Length: 330
Image (cartoon, rainbow, N blue to C red; front, side, top):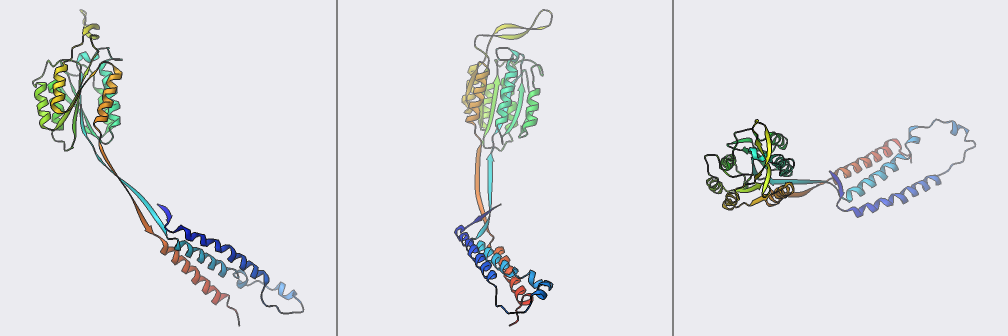
């Protein structure tokens, strides 16, 4: 809380304390009525009583009471500022291709690692959103359901790799699995970001059919085709059973990915290197903004009464001391 004065100009009255104190000191030095005595020796040796030590206290109490009343007149207030934030988050499922071709080295160090790094940065920027993760190759599985626990999600993202499941590219299954995770979502905005580097060649569900289901569920799908144009160093098994890399033609079913995006109100992007992939996620991040409402309100509590009561208490103490202890004999 912060102390605030509604009428601070009254505080200038505190400057009157200076002439008040000056007048009191001058009057004290002038002394009162005088009497003549033959010798002051007995007076000097006389013990000092309580009245002597308390002789200036009434004025001090009266001056303090005046200061407190001036502060009360300026209307002191306790100010409490409250900020209420209401975030309407988005539910987002990331569907990432983990087929063997994602080890191709046209990205640095390879497609799957680049995709994980950029997806991790995307997750870190989506404060307040629920995000889930689906991995797919010849089949699909949920690596993480929708969650706001970014730390756990980042750990699970780091664990996905090529070779976890049967090889192939089941785009329809990957999309359907992500849709199923969003089916029970009550968020006003539901999004799937599907990343793949190939052509649908496995799975029981056709990609376009999965897109129609997403459309019915009100889910926007952003599709990303990953791979350079022409050829790329692609993993292959040599005659000795060892993995090697050969130049192979990059084949991405851009037509199907475009159809999925168009059917659901999303967009299709083509990433040919790390920088373009990062730029694509940044653009999706801008397109899908969470709705944040910030209500800022201030509460004022009047505090003048305690200052008035304190001043009255000092005046009462001054009156009692003056009448009971420092009472003068007429």
